[in-house]
Length: 439
Ligand code: PMP
Image (cartoon, rainbow, N blue to C red; front, side, top):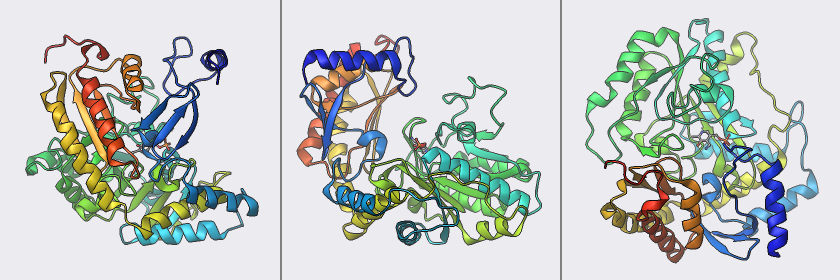
C-alpha cells in the first residue's frame, strides 16, 4: 500500500476510532496490519513482524491456520448463527463433550459466553444464585487476591486489583469485594505457609458473607504477570471446602497449555467448583468463552428460586465459534502442545536469562510459554514499540512489564529473535519513562 494511503487510513483511525485504554485526544501510535500468517504479522507498509503477543494470548496455532480456516468456512455454509433458546446444534454439543473431557474432572455443566469478561460475569452470577438457592442470602460477596485481572465488565472489574484496576475510577460504584495480598512466594521458590495466612484469616472471619473466591490459577496475567506457588492454590481449594465457599478459577489466560499444563489448576491438582475458559478456545479466531461448573453447583441453582441461570446472550454458543473451537481443541487432542511448550520454555529460560545483567531489569520470570522481564521503571509505550518494530518483532509491554506469550507454532529461530529483541530493548534507557529512577 502506498504511503499516502496508509497515512490517510491512520489519520481517520486517529480521529474516529477508540483503541483499548486509549485517549481520543492524544492516542498512542498504531500500526496498520495487512495480514497475518503463522507467527508473523505483515504491515501495510510491507514490514513483517514476529508476533510475541499471540494477539493478547489467544492465537496458539498460528494466524491463518489452514485447519481452522477450513472448519470456519465449512460451518458458514451450514449456518453462521442460530439462537440458542429452544434450539441446539452439533457444534455446541461436540464442543461441550470436548471441554468436559479436557477440563479437571467433575466440571461437567457448560455455559457458553461471548467473551472472557462475560464468562466471569456468568461465574459470579452462578455463585450468587448458588447462595440464594441454598438459602444463604447473606453470602453475597466475592473474595480474591490482589494483583488479579478478570475482565472489564462490571463484576469482573470489581475483583480486579484494587489499586492497579479501575476501583479508584469508579470508586463508590463498583460492588465492594474482599481482597487479600497477592501470594508473595513465586513459582519454583520454597513454600512457606505464612504466605497463606491472610486468606485463612479472611475466610475464618468472613465466610458467612462469601459466595465465592475467584483467582487466576498460578499465573496472574494482566494484573502483573506474577507466577505464584501451586501450594497456595491447593491450600485455597481445601480452605474453600472447609467453609463451603465456592472456588472459581479464571483459566481464560492460562487455559489450553499456556503455563505448561493443559489447565494451570493442574499444577495444584485442584478441581474448582466453577472454571472460566476463553481466549485460546477458538485458537484466537473470534471472541468466545465458556463457564464450566460442577453438577453440584448446577443442581443447587436449579433446585432453588428462580431455578434457572439468569443469563442468555444473543450470540450464545455461536455455531461459527463452536466449529472453530472444536477444530482447535481437536488439534490439541491429536497432538499435545505440552512438549513444544516445554521447548519454548527452555529457549526462553536460556535467552531471557541474559536480561538479568541488564541494569533496567529487576526480575526475569518464565513459565510454560510465558516469558517476562519486570523492569524498574515503567516503559514509554510508544518508544518501546518503535524499537521492537525496528527489530522486526511485535511486543506490547505495559507498566513495568516487557513480556512475550508466543504462539505454540513459533519456530526456534523466530523465538530466539524475539527473546534477543526483548533483551536488546530492555537495555535502552530511553524506552523507560524515567530511566534515572533509583534501582
Ligand atoms: N480473565 C483473564 C485472566 C484475562 O486475562 C482476561 C483478558 N485478558 C479476561 C478475563 C477478559 O477476557 P476478555 O478480554 O475476552 O473479555
